Image (cartoon, rainbow, N blue to C red; front, side):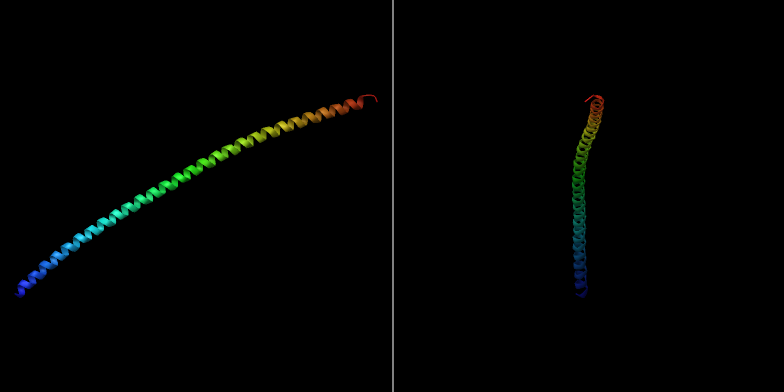
Length: 104
């Protein structure tokens, strides 16, 4: 009977080993699935962050374009005012010369 009990123990241990191997395989598969899900999540997060950064860049480019346009308008206005000032100086200078040359 001793041999029979040893045989039963061996069979039970082999059965338990098989169950543990299957359990281990399931755990490894679950880990791989979790790793894959984490990668997918990380990829989605990265895509979202890149998308947000892209939209921010577009916003900043539009703002810069607007400021450049405004700056060009200011430059144009500045030149116009300088020309106006020069004309006024010349007009007043000519008026002064004309007044000086006129008899009182």
